[in-house]
Length: 349
Image 1 (cartoon, rainbow, N blue to C red):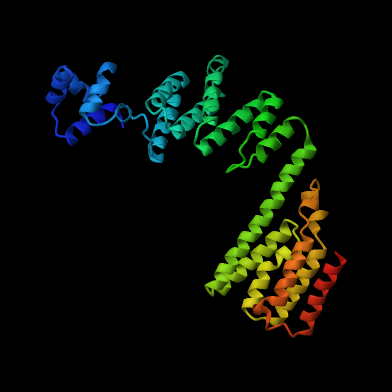
Image 2: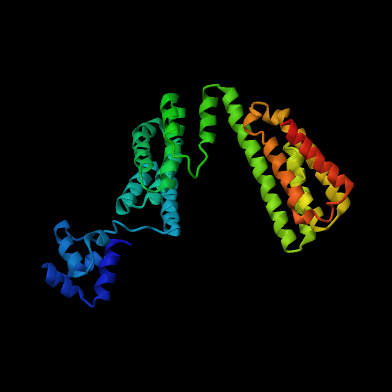
């Protein structure tokens, strides 16, 4: 809220007139009227007395600690874009600076406006780019040290990308090392850094790692959705989700253990003995054969870090031995054969 609105609203809240304000501060009534209309502003020497009269502190009077809503930030950001288009970059930069001075503690607003200015800077003349680049990235540097972790991380990424663009790889590596590794995955920036240095092996390794992790996460999410549908007894949707999870796993060349987990849940829920035993056999085989090891999709990965064969074998064996949901197939000879295979594999380990 601007100072003129604060003066007017606070004055009315405590039942004062413009004449009361003028008399207390020793100014004219028209002067107070101009403050409230936003035509002029109070002299800096009057601010402490005005704040006391309105029963607020100077910080509140100046909106120093005020946080803007996302809608307000979006509105102000659109104003800067409009200004760039219709009045030019220099005019927009000045207007953005005025807004940022008005809300100096709203880091989200400052980041939004700075990012807009940075994005449009590349379309300006060399002279304008030379004049404003340093100022923009100085602001990102300040934001990178702010208390708002999300804004700090986003600003750090902007600084890192700039360092890579300038071929200052040492600076980029240092920024990455100091990155807090919280909500934003810095690996995309690392891949960009390695690619800029023609280090294809490490670039491939990062992107293939991301692909492998995301493929597993996607299958796990589909499996959880399938489980929810089974809980709701929505078997039709559960079948669709189980098939989709299986198709996704196979498309990304994950093993049959992962691919068939959702299908096993459905088969058990439907008490389908034949299907349950078929799927358990496939999952057992899937633990021994991992297509991702030979896949072009993961050719640069060192799969020792992903090998969970022993862990999966132990977990699956425990489920087969103890899970009451499998009681309906437990005495089946095929089931006992599968259980023996798991015990045999564990002994080999």
